[in-house]
Length: 119
Image 1 (cartoon, rainbow, N blue to C red):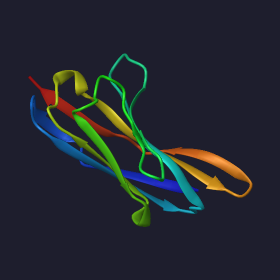
Image 2 (cartoon, one colour; image 1 turned 90 degrees about the vertical axis):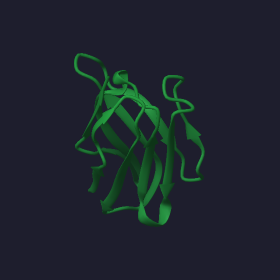
Image 3 (tube, one colour; image 1 turned 120 degrees about the vertical axis):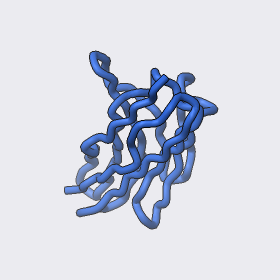
Image 4 (cartoon, rainbow, N blue to C red; image 1 turned 45 degrees about the horizontal axis):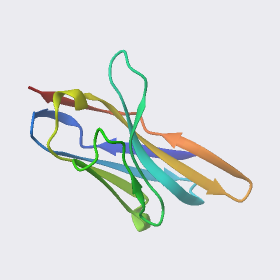
């Protein structure tokens, strides 16, 4: 089992910044892709950013140029720097990590951290 523990959410005014962190622990083989997703009330969970073990990042247009994902492979930790936040960024943010073992690959999710952006 792998546990993902997120931190860094909170309340911020529009235009402000927040930095989320997510640390993986437990029975880790190799953490492949890591990412952040979000879910607003009444909406489906959506991709925010992903990063490969080699550092290649992917963003949807809605957050491109405002959010930056990074990771520390030695610490099995992924970060999300969020700048120029907008009220529509308000959501619960979930960390995701793919654990690759010799006989299986499994995706894990964090418990979620609330991000609220006031106008």
